[in-house]
Image (cartoon, rainbow, N blue to C red):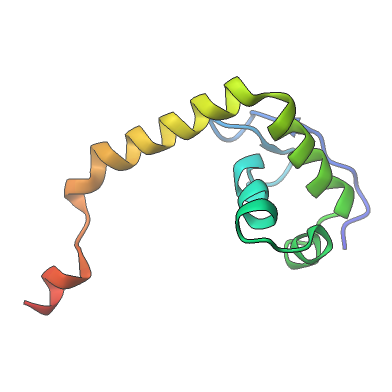
Length: 93
């Protein structure tokens, strides 16, 4: 487990992530709240301090408008590029 506390920044991504890592606030929120994983499990799997996971969750809930905008940008990108993906049903035909 990492022993360095990480800040939430926007250096690498167009969305908030842990400083020095490519792990986004959104990803950590999904792991803990949507997939119902224990924060300590998430931290161990990604070599983070459990405090980093809680810091990301706090950031997510303290900045609801920013996180909603991030989610909308992500969905727009998915929608815009959907035509470039192959559906598994198409591969079987």
